[in-house]
Image 1: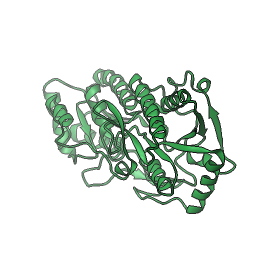
Image 2: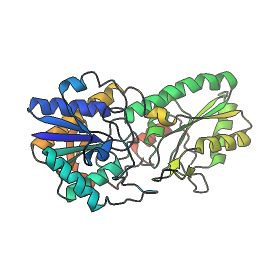
Image 3: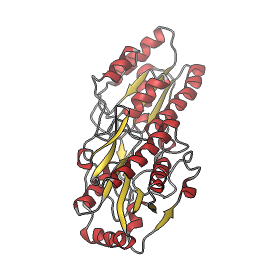
Image 4: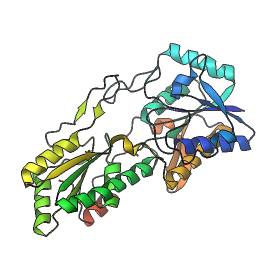
Length: 357
């Protein structure tokens, strides 16, 4: 059997681990793996791909990014605006289908987030042998408890907070760290807890500048003259606005800038020297953590197992430390958000983190 794999959407630590798992498991079965380059675009005639052998994936576990390349634009872009979904034109689907038929691809593994898996589901409904692998550092895909890349992003946040703490303490400052998280605050919450943040602002929880400022003043009164604030990029301001700008190349709005606004308002309300820092794409880059390498490889192996069993239209899923699968339809267009009264939130509040509510 010959199977294909592609990476679509944003880059993410652990993508190469998935490729490593797929190639390793497929080789054990005597199968051939074709890696399509730059996402779905590699499917279009004349085809942009390479045959992947064990030697091609040797040593790639430690590498960030993806050896196949990826894109969130092009003929197969599923997101055209703020959460809007566009169907891929049938003409494009037919061209790509002729390509994989010509190559004799019996299963196509799509590694991507909500938008990429939405496209994958459309292809499956059109008769393609699709298997999905969930990928997003935001950890917000439904039907899986964790996605690879999340742990690496959280680790980057923790490192940033560790570094900001020393300069905050030296100057008795308030330091605001803006992290990724369009609609879900998992990176901010987990990173804030692990990094010892004092304030965490999330898209799921409305906050008040005045309440955060009062919390900082209370810390000052107790002798804690520095404060670390983590804010997710998609956190709504008290008036309900989200700080974002239109993308010059189309697609979804680009979020970013809320950290500067939070820092400015808190400085005015507290009178304390306040600075903002944005991690941005640092959270996507670099070597994946050991957890993401193992999880990515396990996802890749399970994807091959699903292909072997002919279970198409399904997505690899991680639940209760076990890797299994669910229908792709159960995962797309359904975000997994932080539960304001969930166990993790209760633990965060218990250790003294302020959420501004």
